[in-house]
Image (cartoon, rainbow, N blue to C red; front, side, top):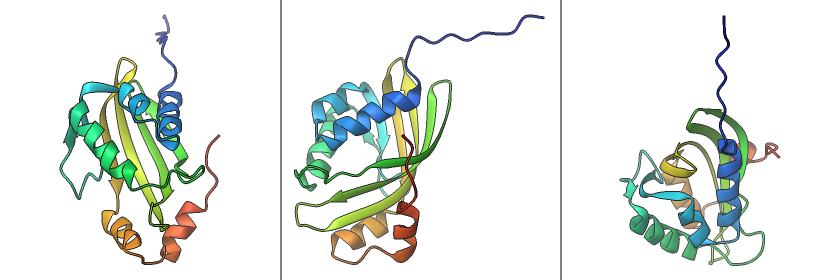
Length: 156
């Protein structure tokens, strides 16, 4: 009986995604986009908004969403608490926390599914409570249960 050995030259999917997070923290849109395929299908809020399809649409989303985030160092505190990967799919649980250009902080726990083709992201689905984000953007305080979820220790 022979064991099946799968060898993959690519970095683990989590490491690839962590690089995207690091680019995002630096507001390096070009590097974020370079990590995506031309035909990316990105559900930025899967149950609340239609998918962003294609790299041009992803660039527009990054420009708009990123433009509302402060340029101050440390203003983006995106963290991953747990992850699991299989073949070309990565599952993550984390919090996207950032300071807006208006000085308001948004804390959004989420789960995401990221699919890869080769070394680039071809599918990305974020499951997040978009209403909670919008309320915080309008000035409401971070709900206690959201703060509790966000206070957990992040990986690495």
